[in-house]
Structure formats: structure tokens, C-alpha cells
Image (cartoon, rainbow over all chains, first blue to last red; front, side, top):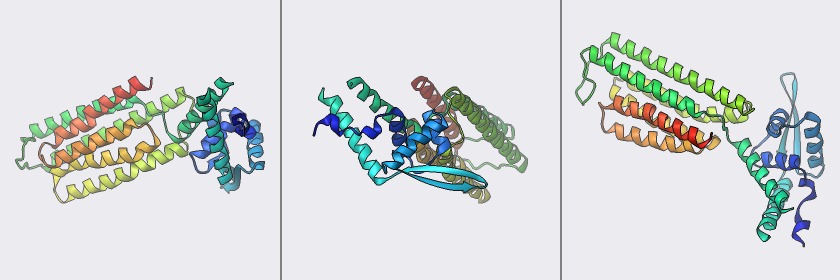
Length: 97
Length: 204
């Protein structure tokens, strides 16, 4: 397989790379903190997260803290594997040239 | 294309770093804490001396009730002032970098720092209670060093090295009881000032 092909299309956007990077080194991260870390809008984050959820890379937990709803995210096992493969492919591309 | 991949990797690295380490600790607060500690050591030395005690050496000194009260007030005031400036400069720095100060990261940092520190505090109160005054300064240094080492995994690595230094200093002081004030001044004064300058130079 070509190295370029092994790059995961799901991780093409910077925002998704950011989300995955944050989730890889943390346990559950809530919406507010994720938004602040990436410095993006609510809608932007929500749409990228739901795309990652559809691919099965991220799981979502909704709960109530007092009366406020809180949404948190965590990387799934397949998300971890997919992201690591993507990282390896990126590294190979850079070293190969 | 290669540039894009390179930037991607850099972005990933910086996001991992930013989300797992609290980077708003300020070097200035280290310098100020150090200066406050030096002033406090000097005041403590003067207080003991003016009450007829000779702090240095292994000679047993009789600390009178009034003097002990004054020393305790000095140490509590030192603690409050140092913490105040520490928090103040940390807030300033996180505002400047546009980062929130109260998040899961700073909570983890604070818990991992406070648990060994509170244990150390209780330990020192017990030493005081049993009248082993000479062991208080070394114990403060040891527990502070362990607390820093524990907390360092959520912030700059430099904090870990500061922890090692405090620990070694505290262990050495255990064998030189009677010189606790000097070790305390080096550990909480001098080392904090050096650490503060290193941080300022490295991360500014």
C-alpha cells in the first residue's frame, strides 16, 4: 500500500487532529475544555466530534452536573489504533523525503 | 505537501503537550517566594537571637512561649504572602497566554501537590507537639521536595529537578540538626530564586 494512502482521510483537518491529540493523552475531556484548548466555536467542535463519533473513534458521554448538562469525550480503542497508524504514516512521509 | 505533514505533526505534539501539562506557572512567583523566604528566615533568626537564643549548633535552646508564638506568626505570614503572590502571577500569566486557570489540569496539579504537602504539614505539627523542633525544617524540605516531584508530571519538568534538590537538602539537614534555619533558607529561599530565574529565561 502506498504511504499516502495509509494516511487517514478522517484526520485530514487540523481540528480533528487537535481533538484526537488531546483525547490521546487525557481521559474524559468535557466540551468546554476541549473548545478552549482548540480555540474554536461550539458548532465547529460539535460537527467534527460527531464525524469522529460516526467513524467510531470517539465516544460521547452525556450527564447532568447539578442542573447543567455536561458532554464529555473519550477516545475509543479503534480511535487510538487509527490515530497511531496515521501518526506512523505522517512520520514515514517526512522521513522518506 | 511535506510541509503540511510536518506542521500536522507539530500541531499534534503541541496539542498533546498543552492538554497534559499546566504551563502557566510563573518564574516571577518563584523569585518572589524565594525573597520572602529569605526575609522570613532573617526575621526568625533575629527573633531567636533577641530572645537570648543561639540558633546555630546542636546546643539545646529553650524556646519560650512568647517567642514560639512570634515564630509561628512569622511562618504563617510567610506562607500566606508566598501563596498569594504565587496565585497572582499564575493568573497573570494564564491571562496573557489566553488559557483558563481552573481546569482539570490545574486541579490535578494542585491535588498531587497538596496531598504530600498536607501530610508533611501534619507530620511537622506532630514533631512540634512532641517537641522535636530541630526536625521540623528538614521535614518541611523533604515533604516539599516529594510534593514537587509528584506534581511535576502535570507541569514543567524543571519542577521535578527542584523537587530533587529540596529532597537532598532536607535529607542532609536531618543529620545537621540545629542548622535547620540555614537549610530552610537555602531550600525555600535560594533554590526558589534560582528556579524562578531559570524558568523566566527558559520560557519567555
